[in-house]
Length: 388
Ligand SMILES: Cc1cc2nc3c(=O)[nH]c(=O)nc-3n(C[C@H](O)[C@H](O)[C@H](O)COP(=O)(O)OP(=O)(O)OC[C@H]3O[C@@H](n4cnc5c(N)ncnc54)[C@H](O)[C@@H]3O)c2cc1C
Image (cartoon, protein in one colour):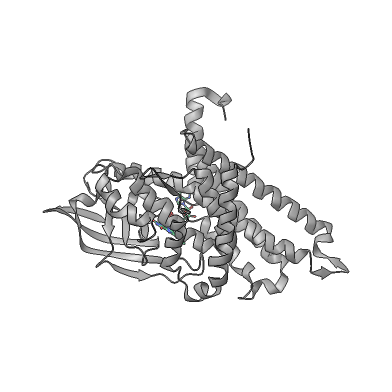
């Protein structure tokens, strides 16, 4: 077992940190004020091959997940909102196209996407279906040359920014099982009615409601096979849960570092906060939990990169990292006392962003649902002495 980063991973992290210092940190105030991630940021990240894909001999391949989590964690330390905008594009929209799209779809959408010239979103959630992914109602009715989409998608990251979107829709309303009723489409956003959702989490990422009203999608917009979309959605979410776990860890770490600096300078009762044993112990506990979440996430990434089943590991990582991020970000904010609530204080955003990370890509309850299903599978296959 080797826990050390490779030379390439060290280089990746160091070039990323330089990029964050030069291109992100100086602009954060403006982006948070305007609540927008500028499109150029996607292109700049793409130029440096920081979107999770690499061109090798003219072919685009997915970068190792271990590399992708380095990027998600480091970005989230500074801005979980920016990290989520990039993850929704690269880890959801581009991932679905790269894994399941046709050659033509890759040419037309994945290529401009991976170069950061176009931005994507992944739209499954609806006003009446979130955790229950298969319960969507947006209908795709076959018409000459394609489909007409009718329905509403809600809480879609990059929703108003996106040039194209991966959209789930019911294509077989008569199917006995809802899971066999759904297909996945790639849809251009031109002409789509979209409304930005005002929110207080994951600033400056973009969140929107999308209104499909007799919205035409040509036949070649279908991703994979008809009525097989549910499986593709779940495979996409299983993968993106690892990125979200890393984002939650970055959120916890960002808050932790700010609080540590504060506790090491602020005095109360004649000594630094950090010199009060009760506080030092809280910092010790939080650091241990951050590291535990990191190890779970790295294991999930390693399982994925080595072609093994990572469903259980991804859900455990996502669940644990988000629970800890919520607790640690809140603890870190409290270290600031009253000054933590001032809007200009960067600590302010972390508890809210940690909360958001526990919602996206399946809540804690949904992760526990997946974990308990995986547990049952192992129990049935090998009894209670199953290997873990
Ligand atoms: C900032 C943000 C960005 C998002 N971005 C996207 C995006 O890009 N694309 C997209 O498609 N969606 C996106 N979402 C939606 C997100 O995936 C859903 O909010 C999430 O899946 C939960 O669904 P819901 O909000 O409908 O809650 P519900 O499903 O209504 O759940 C409500 C509560 O009930 C619990 N619950 C539900 N089912 C069970 C169960 N079986 N057992 C126990 N408890 C249960 C949940 O854990 C939760 O606490 C985003 C959400 C947020 C907040």
